[in-house]
Amino acid sequence: TVAEPERSFEAAIAADQRIEPRDWMPDGYRRTLIRQIAQHAHSEIIGMQPEGNWLTRSPSLRRKAILMAKVQDEAGHGLYLYSATETLGADRAELTGMLIEGRQKYSSIFNYPTLTYADVGVIGWLVDGAAICNQVPLCRSSYGPYARAMIRVCKEESFHQRQGFELLATMMRGTAEQRKMVQEAVNRWWWPALMMFGPPDDRSPNSAQSMAWRIKRHTNDELRQRFVDMSVPQAEALGVTFPDPDLTWNAERGSYDFGDPDWSEFMQVIGGNGACNVERIANRRAAHENGAWVREAATAFARRESTKENA
Ligand code: FAQ
Image (cartoon, rainbow, N blue to C red; front, side, top):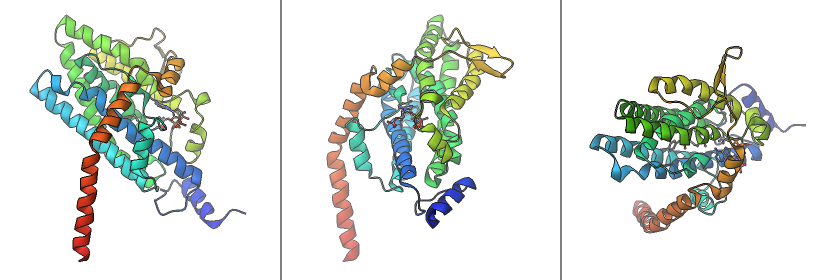
């Protein structure tokens, strides 16, 4: 016999209702959400680094203001998502500790270097584009606080994607050298962007259960296909190509066929051996350690304020 709280959880999922923090939920559901939302939060925070790399070298004041706004938004998304994990009983200091110790993952994409300013544009266009494609369906995720967080995050990501496309469109109207820079950045980021959606469905251990719980609304391969279909016309509008000889329109499916990303590279990157993994974590650790005095001061201040109130 199924206990009453479990029955109402199952009924809520089946009726496409939201699960809220105080509702009963299976341990596995809670664990999966903490894992996914924490990884997402870590990705936003680590994701500040590749673009942050160019803040002091932006080509104009306008580009610098845009980039600063974008990187700040990413910090905001990270903090917002850590708050969502706290509604599940997680502790953000512990989650940060796990990130720094390599016990929790962040998106593979942020382990690639940003070599030119065109990379800033391509991150906006393709990386934020992939993020939106993955996150718009998460606005209907079964866990209320996560779904609601995604609505705001997606609005900001849309601005991020537009600024990337606009940056690239400007460069494409520039010199032959600038156009070459854009194409070269697209060539480097295309495959890693496809890997953001996770391993193929038959090698995705979490998908089936997460779909059943309606945490995820589409499989990794479905979203990857959607992203390819969405990106090809945008590439044509820009005047760039993707580095995939197998990319062809399939009229029968009404979708593009495309080649297989190098999954051994993906496994290497998520295993800690990508081009920038060590540097990203070292920077995060240093920021955390250098910020210790701020956390201590804030805690002391909060303590003093609360004793004042109680007095
Ligand atoms: N990188 O069974 P599945 C952004 C792991 S957007 C690293 O398929 P799941 C915005 C996976 O965790 C990027 N690891 O897993 C931005 C699992 O390992 P575990 C963040 C990956 O969870 C833009 C194992 O492989 N977005 O930050 C990756 O069902 C520009 C097996 O995989 C999100 O996190 C990967 N790409 O599906 C910021 C979105 N893929 O944990 C700055 C929310 C898989 O068992 C600049 N997350 N793994 O040890 C999701 O939608 C899902 O978690 C997936 C993975 C689709 C990423």
